[in-house]
Length: 284
Length: 302
Image: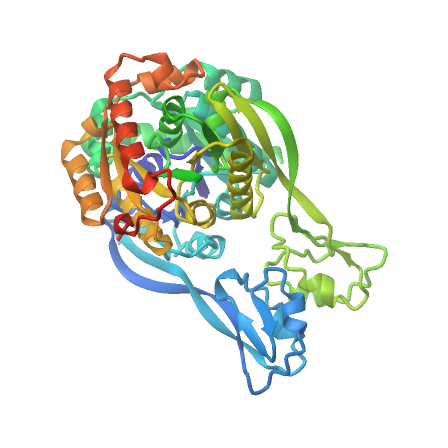
């Protein structure tokens, strides 16, 4: 079972829900932090990292000896990563999307593939909980290939929890794609509602079942509740605002550590998801 | 000389948009720009009246003409993004828009229409003009759209004689953030005093170093964790950023948002309002924000 935790709006509590859910499930579970621009789950899990892998993407390397400056590579490149100046091809590696077109199209076989570092994937565990995260290299613009890499690192776990990035564009899609369920964490505010609607649209594009967690559920208005009812989105958990939770969060302490009774709430949340996914499978 | 203050945070939900909206009350003669095109929220507080709406044409997508396709398999073999199914249909989400299949299809059976990836708007608000956008769901090219709204905000400021652009930036450090920072007069980083707020601010500050932008730092919800507030401020100073001040945690931010107002309109006499006015005073007297357009390299983030 693969559960993605997403939100649209940032700062609604994705990482809080992902880490507490993972800690409550424990053995057989793996948390994949796919918010590679700003991975935060490790700040609450203190994982022991046992493996670090540099993740790269292909970029063209042009042999000046073989190149005849025919410009075919520059013509096929939609991302303007290659340009011909006089008799020489200039490569702008940061613009390259690694489509491989230039390599295929070069009649002289003068282009081979080198590598640009996207970031690293770090893997390990926290007790019985498996853990991997992506960490985008600062200055790198392209996160989806790194996200895709982390997303598939299941390492035999039965339950996969994906902490997705905020927003509704390509990085979130890369993180959520292929999940069995998307758990959307929102707050009952106008910003929360507005961005939730966008996130719901994104999940529908992918055709994945979803449900809501309402965080700081007593700080706002009824907009989210009304929307959930209209859209038939199940509300699977509500977490009221509690200054104790906010302060613990600020120091990197998960809710289930300071209030262990919450473990049952998160396990119940998992069971509700499991049931929804099973019913969904039976229905189709 | 037009100055542009870009407000970022690294971490989402630290209060960028609420604080930008409050600055709009204090700034005189400014243009507002929402560069969080992926999950734009500033319009919810600004109630903009749209004056001009334009399509954002992003990249192209491959489309196989079934009647011309001979199923030779060349496109599937070439596609690095696994975007073409075994029955020769292109998945619009997976297609990167590289056009390799289009150029190399032996039957020339693949079209490559340019896609509308969103919309952008020029609007009027009670605080002056605003440029904002909406990226389509599941779209790419957010960086391009960010660059576009920033350029349009600048054009508008030039045409109408506005001296200042207030840009509400996106979270993270990826493509849209990179597009938000380049060429800014100064960067204000809004941080919450939590382990994640601190961690994410460090990464966005590290990114900003590459762009040689002067930096300012402001702690929001500072009273949630005083130790962390001090750590954030110490980090800011150590990296040559000016500490703007502290804004307390207060549910009036949410209450104001529900009424569609900024906090200065909702609670003008509150401690939050007073702290934001202090922060703003420091921003406009910050030497890098001078109206002469003199670049102040002594203040760049290090």
